[in-house]
Length: 140
Image (cartoon, one colour):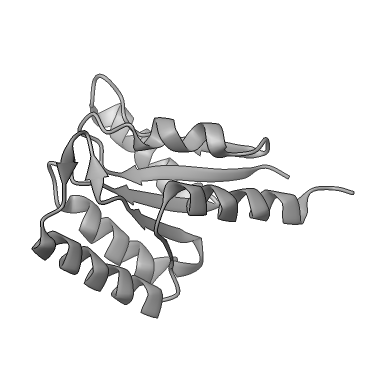
């Protein structure tokens, strides 16, 4: 059985999605919301994928130019915690989170965990979890 994963979070030329997808096994379809031309139709596709995917993964990195992903993580931790995943990657594109940002994301992670969200320390951990979910429902 195929599992679908919405890849939300940091855009801003971050390569975290490209680093994750080769680690995923067959049976995992990902939706990457990053497009060259952001418009109303792209927003509709993103909203639909976010609402209907089996899992919504937020990859947060210091390359982010927006804090909106923090709001999305919190919203999904309240509305659909069993489907929400979070990974905070402390280095990306030669940038690192400041000590204050590391603490802030750790606190957001604790809030999310308290709501039932799974929080990961690396893309390898995320891939391991998702691959295990597909293996658990694979036909024998």
